[in-house]
Amino acid sequence: MSWNEQWSQACSSIAGNVGYGESAEQLRQLTKTGLLKFTDIKNNPGNFFEAHRIIAEKAHLMGPGFWIRFTVHYNLCFGSVMAVGSDEQIAQLDALQKRGLLGCFALTEKLAGVNSGMVVQTTAEWDDSTQEFVINSPTEGSHKNWISQGFVADLAVVVADLSVNGKHYGPHAFLVEFRQEGKVVPNIELGDMGVKTVGNDLDNAWIAFHKLRVPHSTLLCKYGEVKPGNGGTYVSKAKGFTNMMMIGQRLFTGRVAVAKAALTFTEHLYESTQAYSDGKVCWGPKENTNLTAIPQLSALYKRADKSLRRLSAFVGECERMLSIHLQNDTVPPIALQDALACAKIMCSETSIDLCFRLKQDVGSFALMDGKGFGQMDFLQCCKFAEGDSRILMQKVARDRVKAKKQAGGEKEQAMVAELQQIAAQGPKAWDEHYEKVYDLAWVVVTRVIDEYAPGEALPLPVGLSKL
Image (cartoon, rainbow, N blue to C red; front, side, top):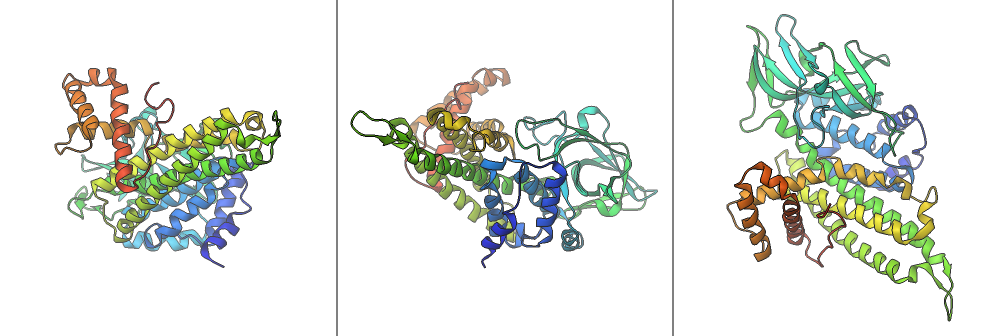
């Protein structure tokens, strides 16, 4: 039996209509199989990405909860250990996996959500007298927010601003013991984010740290460590690399996984809907036909097929190139980083557009429970996960306006020239012309995709430019 078949079989019994405790237990058991190792994100990225895709195949029926739980566990939590952990810390992962321990990723804060970037106000102060870090949430705004798997995790990668001997060294990651014998450790406070439109088999928590003391060994120290003595000394271990830079690479793997998940969701929703419409008999004046033959629905199926095929090829190329850097432990070049952002933007926005159009055109079938349309907010999760699409588009446009090297055709260059004049007037003018910003971003995104996967132009999703 191939690895894909073994993984598919292991995932076959996963259900979405369960409580978050039972959902977490499903992940524990899947983890214990060892079919996908925590180290595969580097050593076997093909399996890592394929595992995400196979789980996403069920998302149109069971929602986003388990898929998000899975990627937080494997990519964000233990993927961060792989990225910034020492050899000794990475060597512990096999034992953690055999125990079925679950992890969460505590980065996002209440004051700095998906629209604010990676702003971190949680603090981690080195106490040289006890050789411990003191992790603290100084304000309500610094409470970690929307932390998936936060209510059940045994371990947490906590991102906090490190200070040693009164000097701040920026965000660093700590692998913190979150529970002991099933109970949350003292000085950690949890709160529920509340009921969601979909994915309620996933627990989402806000987390506050009240001077939580953790040992020296919790700092993931591949690129920077603290030497005890004389108040403590921070030592940078790799020139040109920072912990936060390498933690940020989880966004790259995440963007590939999210892009593929959005496409997979859309592909399966279209497949199941067309199977219905192919068999749905409709009256005709001369002879009966089927629902698929209705012009707008037939055209939509063809459009979706072309778009999904092309985007799948594009994401596949992004995955291939990124995998080389994962295996070699190198930072992807800027051109690839841009392509990964474009993949996230285009795949999530196109999937939202295609599924919305299908819902409007297929009729009452879209209202029926269990047909997949009720889980469409999975795509909303894809839109804001691993960098909100709108924020990424703002970045794409700003980078293009600031670039000294010319790129693109006359239309793109004219748009750049206009926005350069607008940018010179200040942030207020830029915000007032936000539609032009997003229009430029879309032109750049489509050009990048053309460079990686040439083909017929992809249509602009409804509402992407004109709000």
